Amino acid sequence: MRSTGALGFRRTALAGAALATALGGGAILAACGAGGQDGAADGPARLSVADSYIPLPPAGGMAAGYLTVRNDGGPDQLVKVSSPGAGSVTMHRSTASTMEQVERLDVPAHGALQLARGGTHLMIMGWQKAPALGEELELDLTFARTGTISVKVPVKELTYRPGQS
Image 1 (cartoon, helix red, strand yellow):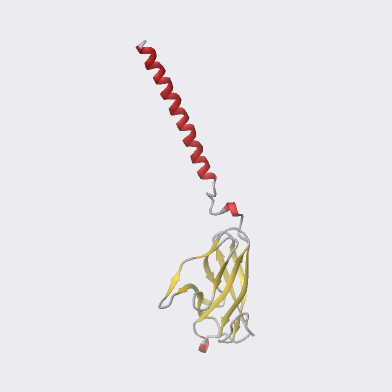
Image 2 (cartoon, helix red, strand yellow):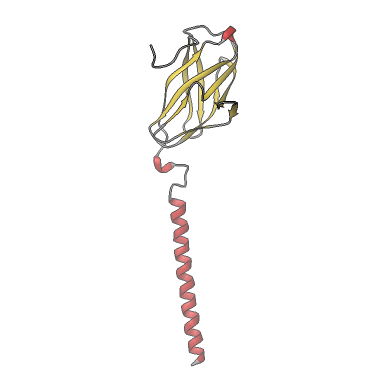
């Protein structure tokens, strides 16, 4: 009788181990399938650019660039900005006391990334030719998921603010 009890215990233990393995594997598969592709559950990002402008820099020097990236899809990140008309374009974030260069900027799903005065903005350096009012500078915005979008950004008066007359 003793050996039958041990055999019954072994069978129960094996059945319990098999059940635990099956349940554990199912939980792992469920975790892997739940949004594990960088927001792919939201679909691809659908980006557009609006309100872009560059205030005329003094004496054609370093300039700031502002724009809004609207997103009607899944999340993305702005990872690089370049221009055939400038030596370099970098992304910066301003606080009350500092300005720091950043490597990437989040573009939230179904939201917007706003580059505006006093906050996140572009710094444009090494112009091929001095900018003039009304001219446009091409900016190539590279996103992690969407790829590169080229936009023409107008040079405006130093005091220009979008949405104001």
